[in-house]
Amino acid sequence: MGNLFSQELAECVGLWLAEGDRKTKSEITFTNNCTDLIDLFYKILINLFRDKKESIRIYIYSNRNNKINQYKDIITKSYIDKRARKPYYILRLASVEYVKKWKEIVEDISKNEKLYPLILKGFFAGEGNIKEGSHNSRVLRIAQKQRLILLEKILKIINIKKFIFRSNDRSYYIYGKPNWDIFAELELADLHPEKKERFWRVYNEFKQDHYKNNYLINNIFLDLETPKTTRELMKRYNRSFARIQDILITLKKLGKIKNFRVGSLDYWTNNLELIIISKIKNKYLNYLNQPKRTSDLAKKFKVGQKCSLKILRRLQVLNLIDRNKDKMWSKMSINEGNLLIK
Image (cartoon, rainbow, N blue to C red; front, side, top):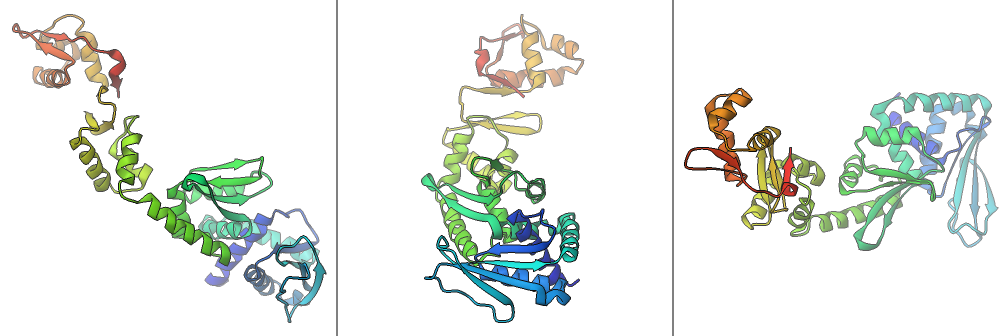
C-alpha cells in the first residue's frame, strides 16, 4: 500500500466516521456537498474494490436553480430537493461483502496512532466548522450526535487539551490559540477547500490579535493574580523561556510584580502584599514563637549554624523576623493571610 494511498485512505476513514453511519451492513455510503471530497472517496473505493466499479452510484440532490457537477464515468441519478441551498452528493457502493471488508480496514486504520492526524483531517473536512463570535472569540467545532471515544482519543494524542462536548448542540468545541497552532501545523483543516480558506483567514487574524503590541505583557500581568513560575507561563502562552523572562523582568522593573525564590523555582505575582516562602522557612517562623539564637534553630533542625543563619537572614530580608542587640531572633507581627507556603 503506497504512502500517498495510505494517507488518503486514512483521511477517507475520518470522513466516513465523521458522518456517523457505522451500523449499515449492506452498503458503503458517503454524503457531502463538496465535490473534491466525493472525488477523493470515489478514488479510494476504486482502488480498494476495483472489481466493484460498476456497482458504485452517485445520487445528486439539488433545487432546480443549482448548478450541478455531473459525473460522466459513474452511474448518476439526480433528484430535486427544494431545501438544498447547494447540491449535495451521496456516493454509494452496495455490497454486503465489501462493507465487511471496509469496516475491517476502518478498524485497522483506527488503531494506528501515526495516522490519527489524517483521520482527524477527514473528520474536520466532513463535520468540522470554524466559528467566529463576539469579542474576537474563535472556536473550532466538530459536529457529532454523541461523544465519540475514538475522536477524543485522537484529540488527546495530538495534544489538543482544551475541548469539550456539548450535547445540546451535538458538537465538540476546541478552544485556545495553542490548539489552533496544532491545527495549523498539521494542516488539519486543509482537506475541504472552503474550510481551508476560512481556517487560514481566521487563523492569520487570530495571530495578529494574539500577538499585537502589549498583548503578552498585559495578559501575563493579569494572570499573575495567582503566583506562577516562568515555565508555567511558557506553557500557557506558548513562548520561550527567554521571552517570558524578559516580560517578567520588565514588569518587575515597573514595580508591577515581584518574585520569590522557593527552592530552585521563582514564583511571580502581581499581589505586592503577598509573601511566598518554602515549607522549611515556615517551620523556622513557627519555631520562633519566642526569641531564639541561631544555634537554637540549628540544633532544632539538625543543620549547621551557617545553614540556619542563611535561612534566617532571608526571612529577615522579607521582614518576617528581626534580630535584637543580644543576637536573638524573633518573629515580627505579620498578616498570615498574606503568607503563601510553597
